[in-house]
Amino acid sequence: MHVIKTSETLIKHLNALRKNNPVVTIGFVPTMGALHAGHASLINTSVAENTVTVCSIFVNPTQFGEAADLETYPKPIENDIELLVEQGCDILFLPDYEDIYPDTYQQQEFPIDGLDHKIEGLSRPGHFQGVCNVLHRFFMLLSPTRAYFGQKDFQQTVVAQRLAAITNSSVEIRITPIYREPHGLAMSSRNIRLSKKGRQNAAFIYRAISQAKEDVKEMELHEAIAKATQFIKAQKGAHIDYLLAVDTATLDPVQTLDSANEIALLTVVEYEGVRLLDNIYLK
Ligand code: PAF
Image 1 (cartoon, rainbow, N blue to C red):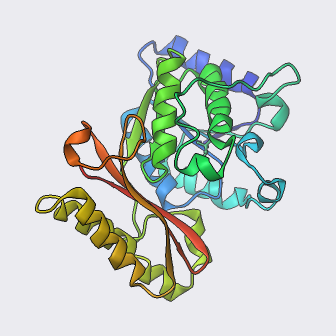
Image 2 (image 1 turned 30 degrees about the vertical axis):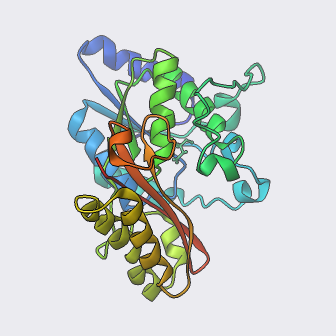
């Protein structure tokens, strides 16, 4: 695996690949490091679908609200490199701040129809615009064929798709299914903050939303949501932040299954002090 630290070298490298092989496809997996099995599955998919896979590790300051969160963000680079090599990643791009955001760079406000202000955006003002800025920079620098995002961060996948559309980017946004721990908990770097038992127990979140997906075949959507809500609330120590069905195009809540072409059930549950995100497509 090549480790490339500047965008200049990366662009030269990718251009040489394109010159030698005009049908080369470049799969891009943007990350902030602290890689786990969920990232491994993104890399895996990209390796299977592209000639070359580039993974970036860049802890993007513009998407953090609290400076403290940014400072304490884990940076286990040796483990990350090991995981990337194991998964067959071709290039690790490790840029520094000035490379991505030179002095001349103006942060942009992308017109994404309020997708950035809804759901997670309510408690994280500026977060999704920060994500848009960094993704736009990466897409401009790398011109990837495909970019890979995990379904777990559902709102981010919708925002990335909208960003690609409004900027007329040729990148194909690929969303890979949620990678789950053996008991069913959605894989996340936050899971290590749970106790061993809590990590197993927290599978109740996936059980609740999977059951809701079954239930909507036989009951009204609001009844299925009420049942899932009750089930989660009955778990000791669990607090629901939200559990709502949304139109995946607008992220607006829906009350019935025929209100939109595609509907997902999104939830955040706080358990043992950890915010756990999960979601499932209902249709
Ligand atoms: O999901 C993440 O790790 C980040 O939001 C991303 C997509 C790498 C942008 O900084």
